[in-house]
Image (cartoon, rainbow, N blue to C red; front, top):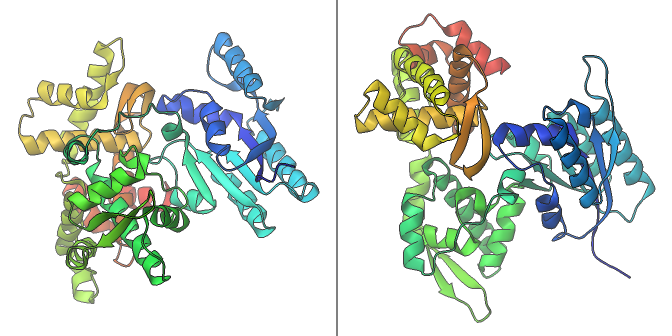
Length: 437
């Protein structure tokens, strides 16, 4: 008798196809199913949605049906004829709960969707003792509260991406990771999580083996995946941390390796991530000083200046022009270079700011992408929003970068208006973006 974990797989097809089309990902579930088989045996496979409503041609709609059949997924067409489109969500939730209560041998429920409406379902499944695996679109577009509602979380963008060639030596890995393969915004996030996991493993009285640390990182953050940070293996992530002098790696008697933290370097690293809090009423009332604090944090985090309103809208307009001139998708880095060349922005700080602006817009779902490129250099097909909405999404993404690490500092809309616009006339816009978007 098969003693492996039994898994029930549910797919919100319209949502799945939607984020695939938006980010240029393949509408193919075999990658996700292969990952799930690492956890156990998939005994239930269900899909819900209206294939007719997916915005692709008839040939691709038939290909989607064939894809479901090839992956042994039983699909139920849930048609809707009015403006309310949550019928398939309801069918999926009812079916999942029915199976949960009537099939006690099923341990784990995997949901392929990127929709906050499923969070109550996740909570109920975990309440009755089930494990929940979530599969969403991309790391940049999925909210933290959504991933934290699951026991494990994976990204279709990562699972479906082509594997990067693994460097042959540790020296090669250090050189590559230090330049092209690591996103500067997220590298410190990985290192902080790795150090926290190593500390927990050691405090539990265990030898700090790589396998234990990797498992603990998953326990601390359900969506952790070293591939999201540009590493083909967990050991390569550790080699990067060793290059940063935060840890030392030693071979163990088994096939694993031992991690030893360099206390002084770790202390300095963690101290550099601690942001000063604005505590006194005098500081909070000093709008200009607070604006400088906000700006310094963002510039330090993004390693790029914030373009003023005039330059931002020049960039937005030129993006439209450059994409209209090309019949083929453009890599984000190439698009950024073309924009800078056309606008004669040759200063290194300006060119870096333009790239960071465009990357923030990509993270904010302002572009339609094609399959290909990389996680940090996607293929851009076209702009999916107008210029004003592009600026709103840039502002929202910047505010999120700040708020993730500064939850205890005040949010002062007037100060942020100074940061983005150089005046205090856009307070209402800032508050609308921060509180409503």
